[in-house]
Length: 251
Length: 301
Image 1 (cartoon, one colour):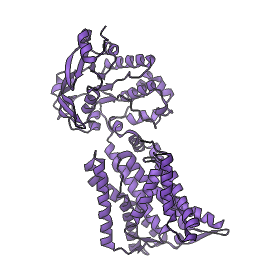
Image 2 (cartoon, rainbow over the protein chains, first blue to last red):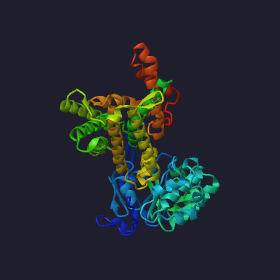
Image 3 (cartoon, each protein chain N blue to C red):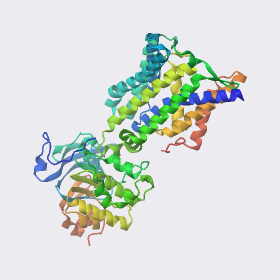
């Protein structure tokens, strides 16, 4: 259980994308789930540093994209992650390259205490509890509480806090504000904003206001393909937003 | 009254043996979604390993030393078969739980056939110290010592497992993995090592259970099919307790052990229906599943 921070890509990796300033370079990704061709050649790039938002309507394959990058779904194509082509790798090896995953439904371990959830996520010899507790003091106060008894917002803090225990050059964060009360939405957004200053974040998010506040670049999926990729300013285009996201949230 | 106490202790001892078998089954299922049908063969092989060691050591270590070596051999034997099974047969089939289950069914048939070929269908007697097969008098009671040994072994294993699951890193990984295996991997943890570990722990407990069952409930005899007979009841215990729940297994094992001996003795033996105890266990299963489809402490799916 030795997750090492990735400062330099170890020998053997392709390293091409990494050198080109990309944290993640996905090319022609195909995923089939139960006979349905969910991703039909998805290609996009995530520059190192800052927040890239992955957008699209419900069911368009955003979560599937994150999960296949992490090896949780079988995929074909090329996924160059921090300088390694990771298609076919087991999930735990991909994570140990220095990836943090905050899944859609938080997926904290309900039967474990908050402290145990954090202990489980420790990788490497010096977990940064001070940093995590500074960001989320509630996790410290509620250390002995079962994670299943936390509110949705507190569970989200735990889900984010546990990936921050270790150095993670890239975070994949799936709908972190979904179902949260406004108080927790703003707390989560400000934490992500701070992390985005040091690490790369690939963020799936439905809330256009959150995207505009956090993201520098956007990638929009539609019908299993990338329909648009560009700067976050492209969201000013009402037509694009209405056509690809199905919301009138541009203004 | 004196019979009642002796019967109760016998039921608890039987429950302890069920728990030893069921704990491994439950952990393996909870973590890996594999119903391990080869668990019965682990149990029988453990008992045979004990028999091999005990019959070759006669007189070499003294009675107590021989007994300790027998227990160690059964436990290690069960653990070893389980380790080989996981590494060679289960691991190549990761992500295909149906195939994994089928492979354990085939392995069970093959191992039992192998034992029948090697040792014949006759039972073998495992040498045991005299005190194990005698009784302790408490007032008017005559309580078999073997019952206390089985009960003690069950309690020791329960305490050990509880400690392991609660206070060690691997215990934490196993508890988390039972809840959500995928998320454990998504934290960068190689859950495959935990798979191997639960197989080894389950195999060790099964080997010990096989030996204790021979000593306490089958007059010191081991035969190639004893594991399969016990496995049926162990599966019932696991289902009643709730798949994947260790504490559920404890409660269900005690319940099944007691019901089986009470019904078998008070209803069955007077009417010449010795099998009534077994039937009652199946009825108990039906009643529990009607009331709680996920088992006593399981999560309904």
